[in-house]
Length: 380
Image (cartoon, rainbow, N blue to C red; front, side, top):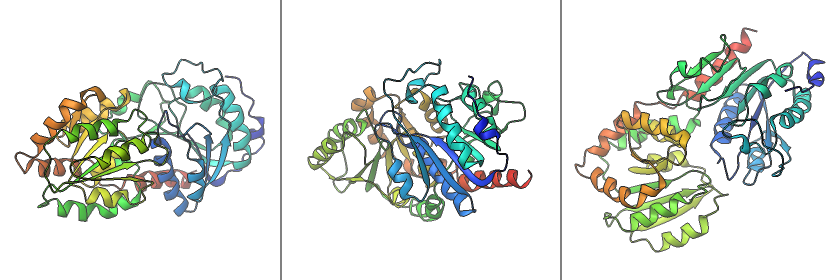
């Protein structure tokens, strides 16, 4: 990729700033953006100024990022732009890597960040090399291990991820942060951990949480409610369904909730997710970033695999007995009622799953990562 970066190379004095290149959309969901926001908030508390470069995909959350106090530079969405490059998720970019890099060069020349953080399946070493003169350090956040990078630090918060998985994809001197200990969780999860774990020692099964991601483009939530309607549920069970504000099926799910045999509430734009999880006795959720939130709080879960890149997360958590797994959406109607019935007999099975989940991560990963980046700045 031949992208001129003279605008960046003219200036070599870097500010105490961090620039994030990350997107959210109806196709890719909001998990990448939310974990970057979590890291940005922690770095901001340490005195960094954080800037976001985000494309205006359908379902973007640019206004939300601004509401969190960060500067955002929107990139125009061009659905008819050529999407070539050979990566499995190339279509998620809304442009070619070269087009994206050219726009980012101009933006980064004004920001002059110490750190550029990239969390995007559609970007690789070609994009990164085009911007090398535009930042002092590069952090890549990934969980695929399927493409090359030219980064100083690579973070993969997947349980069971082996550093060896990345050795052929990164420079020899790249520092690897692998494992759920580095999961980027908001501070309220670590703060709620003790209360959540203590109440699980004797809590009966009264509250079920259903959360299938911020977008849930395939309406897994609706399929789950249909299956639950046919399951044998305790009469005093309360179900809370959490969906994102951009979820396309939310109105249909609200109609379903009104016809459920037990009390069912649908909530969106939730700001107290840690409290909701801490007060829940079982979750049905996707195998995405919320997996680590549930583990931090010791919340046992039935996990539904919604994408190929979620298999490793699901398999790793099932191997340590923290979750029960439904392998695909099509399995929900017959698998979910059977799993739910089995989890309630014997009664101590949920408690055992809770203890296993709590051992996966303690919720301090964001502090670890932010501190690591600061230490590198202090040594340069």
